[in-house]
Length: 242
Length: 242
Image (cartoon, rainbow over all chains, first blue to last red; front, top):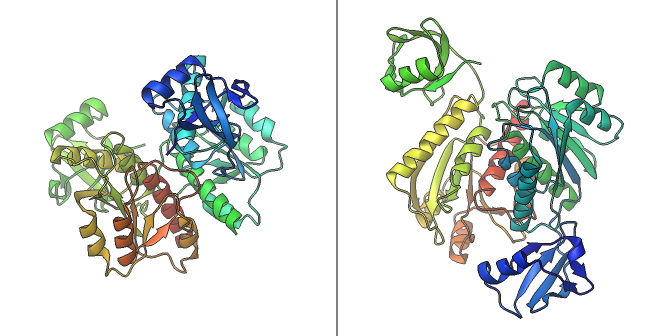
């Protein structure tokens, strides 16, 4: 299996990939590639190339038309959970195919991530995308306040769900399988430890979010996005096969 | 939310729960309960009681009829992955409702877990079951060889699936949603790093396992059981609601 390297789009010039010295070091010392050996390069935005390592960097041999991406663009809006363990929200939903990870600060959010923390999360997203052989690296946006987030999505005419625990909401999977055609965009919000406040919940309803359950068991805040993304990916894939 | 404690069934005598000293210590010092305060006790096999802390241990107030369990009994048969990270196979599938976790040693399995390691995994299962407020703690069985495992399941007349990557198999979700009635038992096998050998794959087919895909992206060995269990739980729950 060929090694996969995510580059910035500015590193591609015609048929050449200008490698940063740490990338070249990694390819030669860790992956143990020599001149003339191949690897895969992707810009994280959907483009992918088979590349040969040379003294001048990477030489593009051919553009690859792999399709490992969901046709549907899934935005996960998750309230920031406690710092530790947050990375699991990134690893698995990335492997399952999520495209946009937007963090929100809710009333019960304790964590205010620094720019360093965001960069660390983006690195995890990049590594998970490489591992799962995706062409797109999900972007982790700067957190915004929950009311701003919900209001900004109010007018969007796409399916919007909000996951709730201990409520008598119908299961997310029921909504997904009842969609006549799988939408090109979908948004789902999951909460932090302690759940949504009543105000937050009603704001979501006001902004046309549909409350959904993820089952009878009580999922941890970091677990909900994992289940959400695995269900959406699976339904999107069987819908698009049909 | 009341604290939940898993006990061994032998600790219950009539209306009394005999607490081990470390359990009592934990309840008083960490959870900070005083005499007269309540907590929930479960035997991990489906029974649950509301219990009051007293000088003599726990006094059962009432038997609880919570139903957070899937009606279907799901057995995950997973090939042991590399040691590190294996715990994620236990945490999330437990929270999603899996009942039996049976590990198998396949050709590419590198890890041979010690009894200590198994105990550690069982502790993680117990904690995850407590957190997700389940009544049943999944049991993690001693690993057995893959051929023995597949052969022992050959004659079982229940749906049996084997997850495969990079093959043209239909998606697991398609099979699950096409079941006329959700089965009371279901088995699914997922592989370790490097996947199944050809021999292992054909042995599974011979033993009536249906090959299934988990989507176009390449999931890590520890990720596959997470997706599998979230899909099965969700389909089981919407089927049983109908």
